[in-house]
Length: 86
Image (cartoon, rainbow, N blue to C red):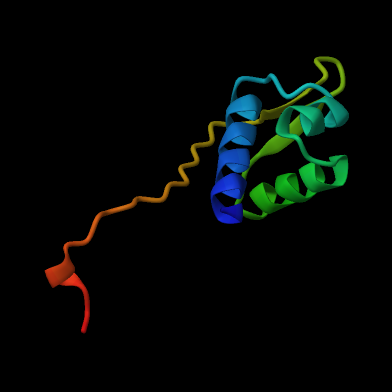
């Protein structure tokens, strides 16, 4: 379940950054139900994947400095009994 929670948090973070609605780091931590240090770790993880994340003190939000798309998903499929390996 932790993996799904992590994916949901990253997707939520991406949407907040994309729409410039993160608030300050502490506000963002509260929105994501994380510690501020964990928010910074998530940001660093995205930046390692070339996410152009910047912070505006004037606007009080994180934003993408250029166009950036991200998609993380997991698909589940029911497997028929005859498809299972023996």
